[in-house]
Length: 459
Image 1 (cartoon, one colour):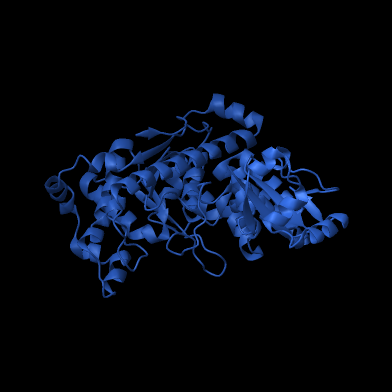
Image 2: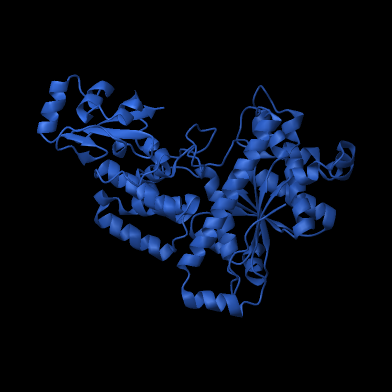
C-alpha cells in the first residue's frame, strides 16, 4: 500500500456533496442520506483509475478534484489504481473490447498513474496550506476534535493476486444475478452491437463491485466516486456490500468533462491533454487553457480549480468587462498548472508565454519548454563545433540554417533592425558563441515579429 500525505486537520466536517453540486461536479448520488451523513461523520471516499495509458489526462482531473474536495471537507480518500481490473477492461462507454496490455506496459502505466495521483494530491495540500488564513490554520491545528483526513493510493492487484479463481467465483460470484448484470447500460449498449460483449468484460462489474467490498472491509470505505458512465459499476458494488455485510454504502457520480459543444476529452476521443509533463508540458497545458472558449471558462474554473465560488464570480465580472484580455483564461491556466505541476511550473509557463507572444526573455526557460514552445517552428541542426571554433558569425549561421536565402538578405534585415537571437535584437554581426545557446540545447532565431527558426546543436 502506498500511503499518501495526511492533509490538514479541519475543525468541522463540511458537506462535500453540496460542494460538488455548487461547483457543477455532481451528476447523481444513490441516496440523499449522504448529504447529512457527510456532515456528521468522517467518511472514507474512493475513486478508481484504471491504468490503460501511461498517465492520466484532464478528463481524469475532474475525478481527482472530487477527491480533493472530499479531503478539504475533512474526509479520508483512497485513489484506487486498477492494476488488476485494467487487465479485464471496463466496457462502459465503449463499442469495442479493449486490447489486452503486455505486463511490462501495464506495470509502467501503474507507476505513471500512481505518480500523477500523488503529485496532484500533494500539490492540493500545498495549495491549501498556502491559501488558508493563518488564524484558521491555527484553529484547525489545535481545536479540531476528529482525526486528520488522510490520502491513500492503493492498487487492487494487491488483493486479486491472492485470490484463486474457484474461490472468487464461489465466494463473490454467488452474490451477483445475471439478469441484473445484463440490465446495466454498459452491457446493454454492447449487446446491441454485432460484436457483442466478451465474458471477460462482462465480469468487470463483478470485480469493481468487489473492490468496494474490499475497501469497505479494510478501510471502512462507504462512498465510491466516479464518472457518470460508472453508475452501473458503482451500484453493483453497493448491492454486493449490502448482500455480504448488510451495511449501507453510497455512490456519487460526476459529469464527464466536455466543452460547451459537448466534445469529450480523453484517449478514446483522440484529444487527450495529459497530466504528465513528458507528454503535455506545463507550457502546453497552460496554453490549452489560455485558448479556452469564453463559453467554457467559468465552468472549468469551478470544476478544475480550488478558487472559492465567490472569487470565480469576481474573475468572471472582470473578464466580461475586458474579454479581449482573457483574464479568466489566464487565471484558469495558472490555477490548473499549479495544481498539476506546482507553482514553479506556473512561473515558467508564464515566462515562456511572455517570451513567445511579447518577445520577452528566453534565458530562464527550460529545454523541454523551449521545445514545446517552438514545436511547429522550422528548425535546422548544425554542428556544435561551429560554436566552439568561434569562427562562424550570427549571419552565417542564420543563412546556413535557412532563415535567409542569402547573406545579402540577412545583412538587409540586420540593418533594418529585424534580426533577433533568443529574442534579443542583433545590432551588429558577431561570432556565434556558447552564450547564444539556450539550455545547452538550441538557439532561437527570429526574422521580424513572427518568423522563427530553431537551431538544434548536435554534438
